[in-house]
Image 1 (cartoon, helix red, strand yellow):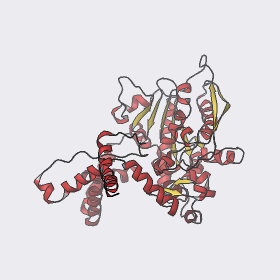
Image 2 (tube, helix red, strand yellow):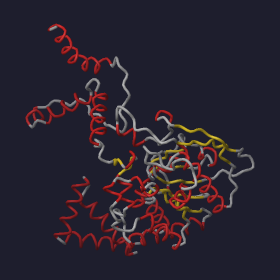
Image 3 (cartoon, one colour):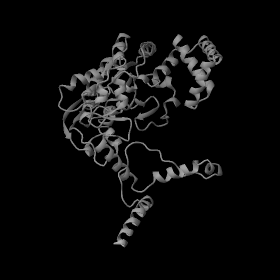
Image 4 (cartoon, one colour):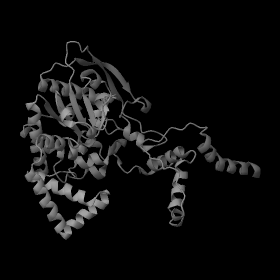
Amino acid sequence: MKHFLFSGLLALLLLPALQAEFHFVQLQPLGGFEERSSFPGFSQEALLDNTYQTAIERYTEERLGFREWLIRIYNQWNYSLLRRLRNTTIAVGRDEQLYQFATINSYLGRDFLGDDEIAFRLRRLRRVQDTLRAHGTQLLVVLAPGKARIVPEFLPDSCAQVLPVHPSNLDVLARRLPESGIAVLDAGQLLLHWKDTVDYPLFPRTGTHWSGFAVSLLADTLFRRAEALTGHDLPDFRRSGGVVRTQVADLRHTDNDLGNLLNLVWNVAPYPLYYPEVVFQSAEGKHQLNALVIGDSFAQSLYGFYPYFDKLLAPQARFWSYNQYTFWPEQTLNESRTVHDLNLREQYAGRDIVILLATEQNLPQLGFGFIDDAFNLYVPRTAKDSLRTQELEKQILASPDWAEQMARKATEQNRDLLQVVHDDAQYMADRER
């Protein structure tokens, strides 16, 4: 008996080490992004200040055998017994509906930009739109709702009883964009209208993005609107039949993105999700749209679930994710995939349409820098503007309290102090413009 117990204990000690070295059991990777540390370099200074020991401990822990199983078991214990999550960005609502806290905060108006800031941005965007139109390019803003807006009935009790602290950015922009003469598609209103008329979820139980079914509905309206704005006849497409999926392994694209991040032993069961088949007609005799789409992960749904971009957009069209990188098409020969390496004037020119798409929680960054990039390109700063920026820089540095605030900001952002001062001064000067 003693030998048996000793052998069992020895196996418990040795198996994780053997698994870490030889990986004889194939484990499902953990969901989410994890940046693993490299093996730390040794130095006397690191040894004395204890950073070397800490780094070795982290390196070893990240490579522990069966680590994925241990994490899933720990997470499952906390979730099943306490409804507590290791991932603090996710909230569990009624009937195990999963939400991102960020979408709830945006729905409640906690990230409201303020009327003055919104008015400033819309004045700039209207100038950009007018300049683009003068050169034959249309502009369309698409406001994508967060899950909390479309499925508020399952919000956690702690959130459902909270009254909005401000108007939401989406509500104000949905009203102010058309008032400013800017073309807008309020997808939130569309989904709320469809919600009571369809049999399947527009947002999945275990996902934060709109479902594949919702994308198939929205695409009809979005591309018909693009046709109306540009006057071009795009290739025809229609929904036909489809399949219903009830197992996590059968869900597509982002329909279980929050569920994956929980890293549980047993997945939260999804509601049945419907994936219609989308049939595209030949592009012969039709116009494929030379579009520049700038947006967040909600825009990726337009090629993640169905090939709308491949079938309806021209080869020279682009999707810039967060206005930083080209995510579609996958190959751009002899062209950098980093947006700000490109000649923006050439990139904007000749487009049929520019589409700015952002979900509710990203509306404080609507355009993700495109509005400022295009405005500064089409309405360049004058010598008078530069002089005003320099005057404001001097005012900031001459004020002890203001300068101290800038110093803290530079430290927090790990940036040069003078660059931070310049950016803030230019920000104020631009608003005076």
